[in-house]
Amino acid sequence: MAKKKTWTMFALLVIVSLAWLAFVKPEQDKQQALADSGAVADTYVEYIQTPAEAEPKFLDGLKQFWAFTGFRNATSGHLIMMVIGLVFIFLAIR
Image: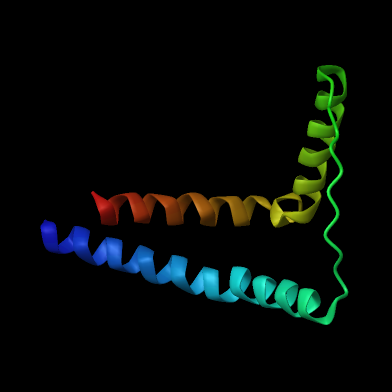
């Protein structure tokens, strides 16, 4: 049982590490290159947001997130595959 948990945690560590290398690290390198070239100017503007303004901006953010994800293009087949995959992950951990 402990060996299975160890392998599961190791697999999760590998997946997270690969995701970090694929997505986060290149973005950090790009930001660093822009900063080194002087193309990025650091400016900070303090903005106090009232509660009435918070909700529309929050909903706009959720709409933008939904537009950038692939879930809006998901078909029933995709969703079924995701559910089956989650069931197998659950069974593997259990």
